[in-house]
Image (cartoon, rainbow, N blue to C red):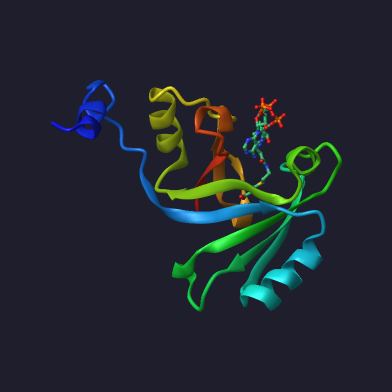
Length: 155
Ligand code: V0V
């Protein structure tokens, strides 16, 4: 058994599959949403397929489709709605750039429980509302190698 397999078998009590299906989107913090939409369309040829305000998350966001079909995935542009929002804080600390990596999951509650079982801190006790009626939760970046990981169960 190689080191990877050994690590996998280190705790036989962990049995629940996290249920990742694919990369849902990569989230990028921006100061000006309209300017960022124009930039990603003009420079990379991406198409804006959805714009939404999410007051609970403190964001105005745009989904930019990569490539001609939905299988290409999306970049999510995230602009702060208020100075207290997570995105405003991120911009103050790090400037514009990648703020999160989001995975589509079969069931966000199952995924969260499976990750808690593996010692990860989930930010919410229960899923909250994300883009287009999805249900979302996050793994704290300090538990995931410095990456804010979002779990997305589509509507
Ligand atoms: C903070 N840190 C990060 C980070 N944010 N590291 C990597 N990526 C990030 N995005 C680091 C930071 O540099 C500090 O490192 C440490 O974490 C501070 O931890 P903290 O005091 O808990 O930090 P806060 O108060 O800045 O909060 C960070 C968290 C917050 C992740 C807890 O941003 C949050 O609640 N995020 C989840 C909600 C969210 O991001 N909403 C916007 C997207 P040092 O200095 O200690 O080393 S909304 C969305 O995605 C939607 C609607 C959707 O997809 O549908």
